[in-house]
Length: 480
Image (cartoon, rainbow, N blue to C red; front, side, top):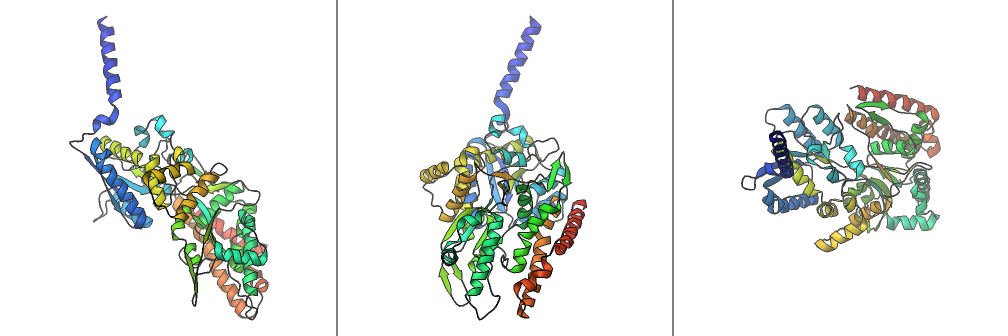
């Protein structure tokens, strides 16, 4: 009986301690101070700072957590600051408690053993509240536990200069339905080049580009996925590279060829810049780019106001409807249980549907909880909070919410030298296209027709040469 009583008493004690959980780690009279490094600027930073202040004055004060956020400038500046802190470089700041991170960078930090295991601080019920693919992206530890907390996500859309599109469509009969596929975009872009060229018959071959895209790496990764190929297939931390020639030819044919011929274009830092200067009419880019879509086109000797349209990003004809999943999450530096727990408490609060949508209304990012990803929930939060939301941002968010049931969001899993491999996807073909377009333009100025000038660059032999060079560069990057 004494043994039974002792066991019973022990069980009661254990249950009572479990009931208290990690809440006992926090003391409002002795608050935990947390620092967050991020890359938000402008209105995004203002929105984030406002939410941090609200947390500090409410839940943070109640629980004993005080958060301070610091913008490190750009994404690359943030990554450099984190690496310097990990390496203990002279003059570097100490590691923050929380910092924004893309998966590839987080993977590097995790390999250094510097990230906290977030699974320890979240119940199964809490984990189930988040979009499954967002949580899966954050499971970069060797044992599959969570290291990246999803806080704001993004995907791609197509934005169009509606005003000038309507003039072109009225003159040529082109329709928006053609823009639903990548091949259709190429066809429309050729028609636009030829139409704009015809407007100045006295000047041969001066047609204009119709379309451009940000993030060429996404074109490779998602384009291949749409065609049934996972270019970076990662299992148990090991990456297998898939670069089948047939599928890559379709990507080359529908990006490089129209770039060389002038049907596509890339001139400024971002394609929204090119819409503003009138160099293109449409582009594929992040939904967060909507806030930079111009209200007018500014030409050298003229300017005119424009309206806009938002469409889902085009998909390869006959391909599966995959769309990119992107956007940094937040990671927690490995420290002590008290700081790690407090950090997760803040991140859970920040990602509650109402709070996350308030941030998304300004930043253009998608919320991360399942219940928040609907137009109805967005409208409810806007009404309850009396928010003023830019129409472009609202239209991008609702377009994606409406499409989510039919699309599959995808991002490749992290692997060693993944950042270097992505840079090959981003620049190898794009840089060649820009260089070869310059050569084609020089031939046009010599009086050659577009077909004559572009012909040496668009043959199967030209593709074969690029393909071999591309595969070699990609393998070299992966090998480090």
